Figure 1 (cartoon, rainbow, N blue to C red):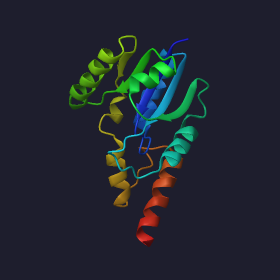
Figure 2: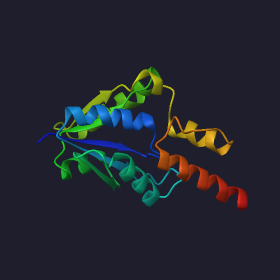
Figure 3: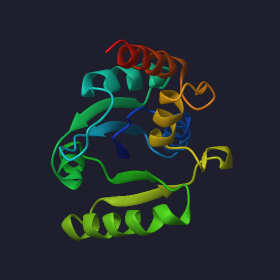
Length: 163
């Protein structure tokens, strides 16, 4: 069984992330979409909220598992018996960072390959930070995120206004 890990912060998950996932599930028998806990980041949504949003967004896939981890990605991949790490590349600017990470992961564990997938061109400009900012300023994010994410962003915005 070919297993791939699709890691990210997913704060929140976007349609661009789901586009990459849709491509990955066609290439691998199983894809584990996993939240990488990063203590240096201050996410808008808690880990549990992000896991819930991801679970809802991917429930129609039979070969997708949702998880979270902390530590080295290659160690997590090894623990899940994964042979690949899936990363999305939107633009050339993503490539340099992702290449460095892929080479370091290869150095740490040469049995885990990094697979770069490009999203549909309509998502090349899309990332979670942009979605959060559009939402924060009252913009409509419904074409950028799954419905439950839009609801969660709206709820978060209302909570911020009331404080």
